[in-house]
Every structure is written in C-alpha cells, then in structure tokens.
Length: 508
Image 1 (cartoon, rainbow, N blue to C red):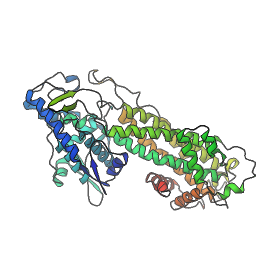
Image 2: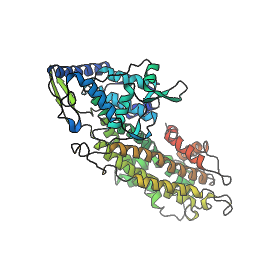
Image 3: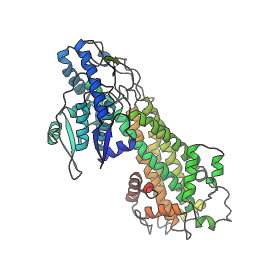
C-alpha cells in the first residue's frame, strides 16, 4: 500500500495498475481542489445569469437545443445518468472499475469540468474502500466517450444499482449500492448542474483497459526476448544474428534493444562453445529475425505509452469550462473522442499476433528433430508417448484467436444520436480486445519457455547465464517431463507468473 496524490497532471500507468490491485491510498492534491472550486464558481456564475449553455441548462446530444428550467437542473443530471446506464454483456472486472474510477477522478480534478470537489472526494472514498458499482462491459462507442459504462459508475455514486464491495480478506460481495456506500459512511451524490455530464463523458473505460494492455505487453516484450534466448540455446542455435554490428547498421531503437537483451541473456554460454565448429550457417527466420520482429513492438509500445500517459492526464469531457479572473467561457469540443486509444489498440492487437506467431514457430523448431536434434516432441519414449506435441497445437489455436482479435475495431463506425454524433472511435471495444490479446499472448510465450527449458535439460553444457536464471524460474513452476501428463496447469501457471512480473523481477 502506498500513498497516491492525484492532481490531474502526473498520473502514471503504474499508478492505475496498482490502484486496480488495491495497492494505493488515493488523495486529492490541494492545488487540484482549488482548481475544481474555481471551475465550479464559473458554473455558478453562468447559472446566476441564466445564460443558455450546452451541458449546463440544456438537453444533450441531438437534444442540445432544448433549454431546461433552473429548478429542473438536478433532475436533468440524474435523468442523464439513469437513461445512459444501459450497458450490456458481462460485468467488468473489479480491478478495471477501480482503474476507471481513478482515471475519471484524475480527469475531473484538472479543473476544466465544472465539477465540485465532492464528486472527486466520493470517487476517491469508493476507490480506497473498495466499493465498485457493477458495470456491464459493453455499451461504449468511444465517442462521446464511454457513456454507458461511466453512467453505471455514476449511478453507483448516487446510491442506485448494485455494487461489489471488497472485504478485509480480499473477497468481494455484492449488495445494493446505497448499502455499500452506507457501510463505509460515504454519502451518495446528488449531481448538480453539469456534473452528470462531467462524470459520464470521457475515455476512462478504454484507458483502464489500455493500461492493463500496455502493462502486460511491456512485460511480454521482455518475455519474448527471454524465451527466444532460451530457444537459441535449446536448439544450439547461432548467437551471431544478435551481434550489435548487425543492428547498428539498421539502428531502429526497438530492434537494437531486443538484440542487446537477447545477447546479454546468452553471456558465457557453454552451449555456444560446444558447437563452435558445427555445420549450421543460418537458423530459421523465427530465430534469426527475432530482433527485427520484436523490435517494432518495443518501439510501438514506447509511443503507445506516450499517448496513454497524455490521455489519462487530460480533460476528456464536454463542454469544458475555462476561467480567467472573473471571465468564464464554456467551450464545446471533442476531447471525448477516443481515436488516439482506438488506433493504438488496433496496432497493438496486431503486434500481439506477431509476437505469438513467431513464438509458435520457435516452438516448432524445438519439437522438430531436424531443427533441434532432440527427440520428436521431446518425448521420452517416442511413439508410446506424445511428449509436448499438443503444446504446439494449443499455441496454434491461440494464434487463431489472436488472428480474429487483430481485426480493426476502429473501422466499425456507426452514426448515432440522429446523426449528430456521426463518427465513433470504438476505442473501448478496441482496447478491451487488445487487453484480452495480451493475456492470450502470454500463453504462447509460456509454452515456448516450457518447451525450451525441457530441451535444455537434455543438453549437458550450461546455457548462458541469463538463460540459466530463466530455466530456474520455470523449473520452480513446471516439473521436468518424465512421461506423458496433463500440461494445462503448467501453461496457465507460467502464463500467470509472466503477467505477475516474476520473469522481469529476477533481472531487477
């Protein structure tokens, strides 16, 4: 548990991940509180003049030309939340809801939304006490932001609907939202003018999914290099393709990082020395070209992190309230549009497929005697036993899943709201898809590590120092293959270990 002070400007992806895991105690900075109060004063000034202003005293979307009487503004905001809480599908995971709440609180505390500090205080109290409104996952078009899921969130803040509550033992229980708030002495909100719209208009759901996707893929890029290094040793492959001179001659940063990491894991390899005079000239592309395949993903990740960091520290609702002295201006724009996240998600889902594709090909290298020099499928008793044969099959099945998931979500535009909202990003659909793709990818890399470590056990010489550390980690999870056995638990356990960061942790 660590303290996390939000100010609308400095939230990190790691902060979001840790909050989803219940590892932060969130609070609001004094500066952000003052900004919010100043912004709210601007809203009050507009209300006092009864100036017709979109989002404050009008209807919404295609109904934005309809003026609302001042004595109906709270009802307007509550109606907005209730009417938009129409998500469908499975419930969001509680950790994603916590992440979404943190991102929404950070957006509002920038002081461009006209929301009172009590709105963020309520979100923070719910995060810290583990009160998660039940939110159906499907419903966002990624423009006007994540309306449906955020409406379910706001509904829970009002004490309506159902919530999941985290107990001291870490277990979650469902109850009426009002009871959940009462249990922790959290007063339900009554959204004032503009606040309902501020709560539900923005990119918080898609950003929550994308935070996990990038967190996972960052880990899995290193795991891809690590599994490749293990495979190189397992098939007595050449180290030459990772020589820095090759990559300096084509100096893409990601390619150079991948090659350098692989080579560092192969340091002081006895296996390399043992086949110094072998007849192998070139290994297959899945071995030799791995830095050129892994590298683009590393570069893509860097840019994706830049985009997401900006997004989670931005004002993404509409309209926005800008105050300068006594002057107040409310501007309608399109910061709720999730195209940055949507396009990023499409690219990263393809990247997941490519990392899995090349990993599956390396599994084939290990299991095929003509490439590896080992027994077929690493079976101890060929014919009587199948060894690791079906590990490749399950990896190929994951590839089929990833192939489907690599199709674009962004190109699925559907105009809504009588054509006024005529271009949607589908960013939430895309980011969720990419997050799922990273989880699937971890299984293929896990399978490669299982196969490579089994093959390494059949080689008398010691592998590189880094590979030895990796084998020790895997051997702490997966027993050596002494005969045919069920392998599903092995894949699942290694996959979970990878996503937990165990592999990166052994290298500091």
